[in-house]
Length: 259
Image (cartoon, rainbow, N blue to C red; front, side, top):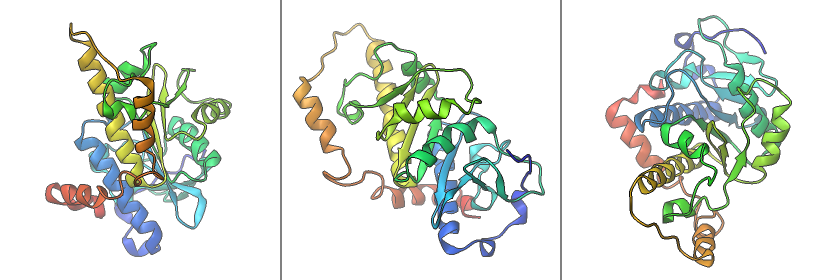
């Protein structure tokens, strides 16, 4: 991987074509939203997006910036081999561990535009539970067929990519055992929506298991029916309708993500 770095202040919207700039704005918004909803991890973890028209080129965060600092122009363009293609004169580079996980999904799943990975308290806790994510509520049933990948230490070894992609299969969400959560969306909006509700499902599970109450779950056929109703081709791709409202939410607080 290239050790080049990027100066976030050195670039302007006119430096990019319209499709890439829109992707940059949406991805920067996603970073800010993840921070606002308490799902960031200091300067660590990543959200990547495929650049339209260049399917082997990805946008990723500069390693060293917090999610609340990310702007459209600060994002770094890399290829699937982790080489930095855009930017090279600043203090921030790219985290290799993020490149390993995200490039694996993007290389194998051409239907995925955005990959979002978190180490939240709730997500990490559920990832360590042998039972995994339980279909306790409607929110949880959206992920009734979630995928799992066993922990292999910090994701630095390139040969792990094959096993991670195998375990993800054609799913939209993956629990990395003893690690965290990952969502893979057909758009940035869908990836964020998936992660928001997956995180909520994990929080609900911890709350429910932390009580002394006897828990109930619907019968398998009801769980399956609910899961199917969340599929993009059945009703709608969840996240797209919500996205403009999420951007307005950001704009009311700090519109600097668009710079």
